[in-house]
Amino acid sequence: MGRKKQQVNDDAWGHAAGAIGGLVTVFAVLGAIKDKLGLSWPVTVVLVVAVLVGLGYGAWRLRSSLQRLLTGQTQPAATLKQEAAPAASLATARRTLRRFPRTRS
Image 1 (cartoon, rainbow, N blue to C red):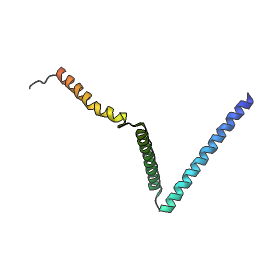
Image 2: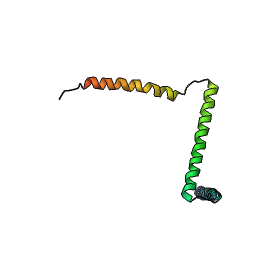
Image 3: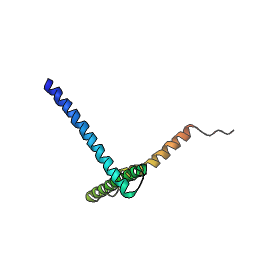
Image 4: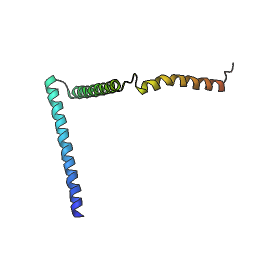
């Protein structure tokens, strides 16, 4: 049993060292970008986050477009659901208005 606890303890130290190494790498990259562009820290962080979000969105769009192209779909299912929603909302509104007729004051 003592060996198992020692392995868990070593794993925890290994994870902590990996996390610290990851943080050092992130700050080194941010520092290099900051120095190269001459920006402040907050602007550098916002710029890097915006670029990463843009890259992620572009990759998602590319992937979904390729899937749609390869499978022969004309529209994604979410678009079809969104188009059907206003009709259902209109029917619900009409039913609600019938239950509560207008009163004249």
